[in-house]
Image (cartoon, rainbow, N blue to C red; front, side, top):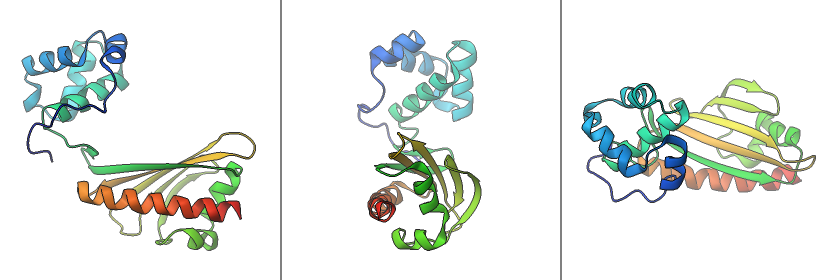
Length: 187
């Protein structure tokens, strides 16, 4: 959990974009939320306040809530209510079915993934997978996107990580794994 107010968050959505979508700039949102006592509220209550009192659409309510929590030192980068998360993606010059199969087929998976033993909880062929990772504690959300007949994208979101250090370890792990996947899938 975040300990102190962070430096100004420069990697969030622009002031112009947030004002266009919500009617307020970041500075205005932060002032409104401070006045409402949001520093003492849990994430769901802040989002609900933004959604109900300020009529802000659901997705934007979440974006404003996360930006506020990060700006006020209530949440670290990559932190969620259930832990930390990291995402990586790769675009590979193969059909989406081949990319999906490289994840689903254990023999193929062993060729590109260091920890090939995981529990596949749910799969929608050529669309997505929900996985309990090999450690039994963290989860993967894997999504597949066709980018044409012979080009696809895979995104991996690793969730329920313990801390920011684990985020960096998993970022490196998935960067390497997806590079290996590119080589194996193209073979």
